[in-house]
Image (cartoon, rainbow, N blue to C red):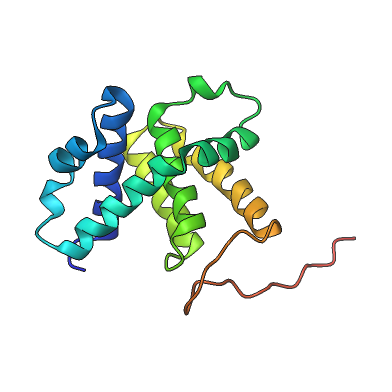
Length: 158
């Protein structure tokens, strides 16, 4: 895949942002924003798949986010932060071939680049706690080499 996944994620972020603000039909947003990815069908399908899955699972994703931002009014969160969180949680839950660390690191970098000064730390904290919750609930379905973390021994803290 010559088009880097970060660029795909950034395009999906742009598309979700456009959708969030305009509520234009998703097909039109795909055509207008993701069209530059059509040169490589596999890349275009990845972007389209992530975009549509985030929109499809939005209620579930927002519920997970709200469970971890109890001290903030959800509607007042930065729009970009909400979108980045949705995208990453969607990858954690529904994209089995992407390691959790990769999804979270990418989300932090994208938040750092496109959102507020403190967004990277905010996104990191929220995603770390959601990852713990998903693992504890047995909801992470990752497969393949390097996708499952090997269990670490707990240090004896006395």
